[in-house]
Amino acid sequence: MVTTSKRAAIVVSSVACACAMLATEDARAIPIAHLTLDSQPGDFIGQGLDFDITYIPTNSDFFSSEVRRTIGPDDEPAELLFLLGTVTEGPDNTFALLFFGTDALGIPIQPGFYPDAERADFASPGHPGLDVSFQNRGCNRLTGSFTVHDVVFSDEAEAATGSSVETFSATFEQHCEGAAAALFGSFSYDAFGEPPQIPEPGTLGLLGVGLLGLGLTRRKAN
Image (cartoon, rainbow, N blue to C red; front, side, top):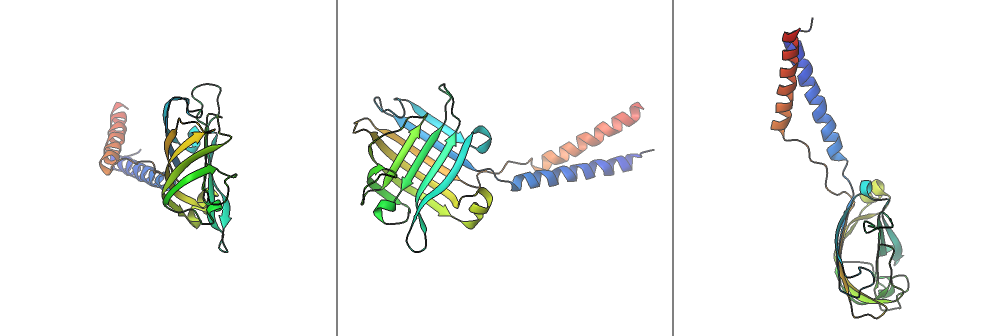
């Protein structure tokens, strides 16, 4: 026969196991990216609409960050590529490609304002590289500017995600094919993201009391 004290011990043990499992889940942080677009009428990329999208691996067929080019004897990162989202044939298409580069400036990418940008991978010497494509629409030629607010690289990020990009955030302005209409936007990426929240200790205690009460009620019913 299982006594009340033994049943209570079993419940306490179960709650402890649940706590340990939640703590382990909490340690597995999820990469996250956030993109906002403010498209003026006549802008080809955003089609005059506004977008605010949060990307995580589980809601995206594509979710990657990559150092495309390096510079100098220490191979410091100088061009970053982000591929995010899911391609569909409808308005729920969230696929985005974002390039930010300083390789044509001859410097590593770092916080600062970068005017007179040209299309990344094709930027001429003395110009930063920028390329923001969305929903499978991209510019052949572009002008614009961007500001890098934060960029961090680490071995820990590379071990966890396969890319050394740990955090990155930027704002940008882009014009396609010489058009006056602009695409304004902001972008941020965090390799470690926000960990899942675990219940407060009080919640876990109530869970244990509830399980214990359930066990005692069932015992009386027998």
